[in-house]
Image (tube, rainbow, N blue to C red):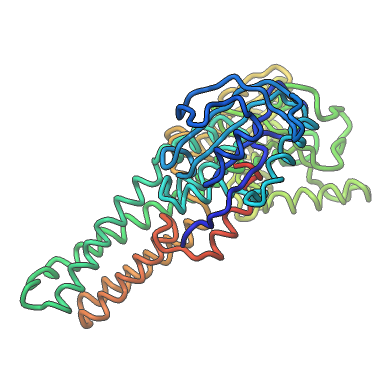
Length: 452
């Protein structure tokens, strides 16, 4: 796969008023096109040097004054000649500069993600780094920013390379034995253990896909339970503002409310749901149906129980969450602090759920910690390799092929073993970009913005 030879241009900043707007040009005609807009710049500008320049229209009239930067191939982001004009951030001005650049027949508008795509095709970055660019642009939490930045710096690329390099070496050894048996005699002696170790590494990396999704999209946590258990008050306390109506009358919450917060850098969407009870009103029943639907979709359900809830009642509410993990807490601990003792044997067994009060804030920080622990397990969200669903599928196929290769090393021919290792290498190459189709690249870069 090779990049086409056309010169591309796009605005690298959003088309809204701002202090600075950037026009980016990449390709063989980039310098000539850039100097047409900024004729005062030397014919052979110093690469990576900022020139104060006047930007002009076709008649030579000055439109603006700003910075002109030239990045000479191959030492640029795309690996081609790149020019950036940094003007004032007037959308109309930037459209005039863009139109002026497009007057050259060698220049065309850039497609979404085409600058990054050219960087990949020209060997400046591998595919994991290219995807990290889009992740960084889309990041809306500190954890997502830090994890995407780590990916851009090569964190995931290094782990993929640590798997791909020995896999390629194994495949070369096996092919050598098949094609040159005398010269490569014994190269396949440890093939079985090598395959086993590689399969374990592929499965370990794939296991991080859940964490990668949490970092990219944020976690979803729903507060649920019986009516009048203190869910809305607790929701307001966790969010930090009065988002939900609170009243002593049961059934106040008729529909799910949501709010996004950030805890220890991880984006979390909290839901306050309608309380569950028998024989609700018609509108409230619709809210309860929505609660049950939402419980099946979240990452964690926090069951808020009234003080004095019995063991059987707690079990019944827990079953409402289905397969979703449940974290139980006792709400309204400021109202009935001694209720648990009053219920004797019918009360919840020891250890009882943690006690919280949305009204006073008691136990709320501990609840936040417990939620993050249940979601994340340990470590820091920013340390995760941003393994995506696409990566997961490729790693699944890699591990499956290596599993078949492991079996073949014991009971089948060397040809079969080498073939399965080759399939594993091809699947893994879809992550690194060493074996990727044009169709896949089209799909990946369509999610990029124009100008990136």
